[in-house]
Image 1 (tube, one colour):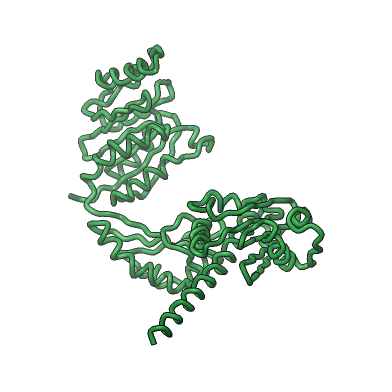
Image 2 (cartoon, one colour):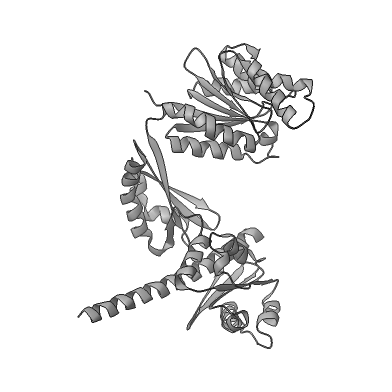
Length: 418
């Protein structure tokens, strides 16, 4: 079977104007990727019948499978059914089963069904009904005479997602002759352009797998993607490229297929048997919030403090201390003094003032510090950059501690064997 191309068309003026975040497109794109189906274009179109028809006709020239979300409601501006029926050359007919499902939904909720909801039982003739237990908008799968397929799903994510997972994915699986697998190498303290230089030949020459660099807030990433018949074969294809990427990026690469930096830090703290306290001046408590929200983070997070200034933190955590003028040295002193007061083995202090960021991490027997001047990009950027720098300093400190302990243990084992 020839590989089918897909296109996502999300309908709704609220999406087009940015009033509602379009999470449906992301969810569908990830699902199509897991199925190994090709997706090259996504479209958002407002609630206008003629413009919807134009978008559909253009998509039919690019793809065989069109996936729609939205526009299946009972009001006059819900026009997806009408637009698809017109472009696919199909008449709209009331579907008795769909109408029974809608009436059943209202009976279940003990509410009278408005007459306008009968519109939702209109389906293009020859279509396959997709039941929607979560709401009143049934979906459907429609076919034209030229090999195109349209999958119509409701717009609310709580309705669209189960319909896609439970009904649409099994239907689409027949068109999937392969698996598309992506693995993500997460990178910190290295810009996207410099990272791309370090991987230039791998990116340029990669065919299967391919490598693609991306910038994210406060970090970068490399996506390694392979197509194969099975997931196991795709993993085998990606593994050499992932290993080479890790080797070239060194400690800038903090993990593969991990959700974020704080999750890695939480795992390292657990391995070391430490709890960490966070003291943040000017950062709004972002670092502490991220650690506590990470998987396993609450178990390794001790008391945390946030204040607008270093003086306020000092008065709370180390009263009577006079801090050095250097921001990095001030963070280091406060980190050392606050550990005893907060009762944790590790204390991380960050200070953010304008574009100046500093941080220090104090572990048993060791304190490290860092300072940097940030580019002028706004308060949110500064808070994220300061938190990322602090997490990275803590990550590297813990890695050194754990790797040193491992080396000592291996050395002791070798001496005993000798």
